[in-house]
Length: 475
Ligand code: UDP
Ligand code: UDP
Image (cartoon, rainbow, N blue to C red; front, side, top):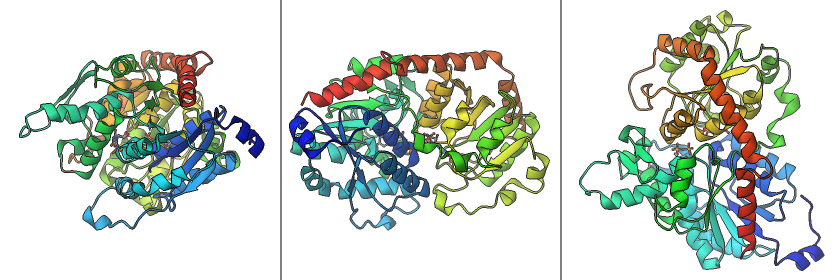
C-alpha cells in the first residue's frame, strides 16, 4: 500500500477509514489476523495493530515482526498488560491465560485508541476479547467488528450457546445443542470446557457470545459454498435474532513473509525434501501450532505411518508452547524408528509453512487435528483431510470436513482427556485406505475449485471484503 503524505491524509481523512485491529493470542488466531490485514492493506484503508509483547510463543513474535517489516504502512500500537496473577487458575492453558490477562487490561485501551491519528473509525477484534472491546467502541462511537477465526458453524454455537443456557433448566446438565437452522451438535462434540459452566473458558465464551450480537459485523474465515447452511442461518437471524451482518471473506491468502524461502528450502528442510517426492505420495501429519499429543499416542502414530507404507512428513509438537519443547525426537519416537523410515519419512519439530506444504503436489493426504485453519488450508489446496479432532472446536470443524467433501472424520478416535490411544493398526489401515481412495481425492479437489471461485474477482469472498470496506466507509 502507498503511504500517504500528511497533506493527502488531511484532504482524504474523512473518507479513508482507519481500522484498529485488536488481536488476541495463539497462532491460530494471529495468523488469520495478519493474513486479513494483508488483504485489507490493498484497499483504501489505514491500519493500526494493537501489539502486546512479550508474546506467549516464539512463533507469534516471529510473525508479528514479519508483519511490520512487510507492511511498513501498518502502524503498531504498543499496549502494556497490567500485572496478572495466573496462580488463580492453576494448570490453565497459557493462551487462555493471556486472553484473560488481555481482557483484564482492556479498560486501558479506550484512551489509547482515542488518542490515535488519523481518527479511528472502526475496531476489528478477536472473539476472545469482544465482550470487553465492544463497549469501548460504543463509548468512542466507533464501529466494532469481530474477525472470527473459526467456522460459521462454530460462530453459530458461540452466539447461540448463551440463549441455549437461558432456556434450559438451570439444574440440568449441558446436553446436545440443537442450533436453530444449523444442526444438532452432540454433547460430545462441544469444546470440552463448555460442559462445566464454572470454567474460565466457558465464562469468557458466554460473555463473548452475548456481546457478538451487539457488534456491527462479523467477518468469518469461511466461504459460502463451504458452509451454506450455517451462513444462511446466521444471516437470516435464525440462530439469534438481530444478528449483525456476516462477511464470509475466507480463505485468507497466506502472506509472502510466511514463506521464508532461503531457510525453508535449504537442503534437508521439509520443503526441499517434499520437492523430491512423487506426486500425491506423501501423508502430511500435523496437529496445529499448540496441540501436544501424548508420548504413548505418538508411538502409535509412528508405527501406524510406518505400517501404512506411505511416505510422510510429520510436524511433531510435544508441548503447548513452542518455547518449552525440548523433547528429543529420537527419545519420543523410540529407538530405530528414524533409521527405519529414512528416505521415506521426515519428522520435524520446526515451524513449517503449512500452506506451502499443502500446495505441494507431493502431498496426497493431511492427517490433521482439524483446527479450523488447517481445514480451510486443506480445502484451498484441494487435499483430502483425515480429521482426528483433539479438543476445543475441532469436532465442530470436523462436522464441516465431513459435510463439505474436504475429507473424512474419524468420529470415534480419541479426544483429549480420554484415557486411551488409537492403535497403530487402525491408523495404518485408515491412512493406506485414504491414500488409495480416488473418490475422496476428487471431492477434495472440487472443494479446491470452489475456493478458487470464491476468492476470484466477483466471487463470494472477494465481494465479502468489498462489502466490509463499504461498511467501514458508511460511518
Ligand atoms: N471461541 C469463541 N468464543 C470465545 C472463545 C473462543 O467462539 O469466547 C472459539 C475460538 O474461536 C476457537 C474455539 O472457540 O475457535 C475453541 O478454542 P480453543 O480452546 O480450541 O483454542 P484455539 O484453537 O482457538 O486456540
Ligand atoms: N502452522 C504452520 N506451521 C506449523 C504449525 C502451524 O504454518 O508448523 C499454521 C497452520 O498452517 C495454521 C495455524 O498455524 O494456519 C494453526 O491453526 P489451526 O487452527 O490449524 O490449529 P491451532 O494451532 O489453532 O490448534
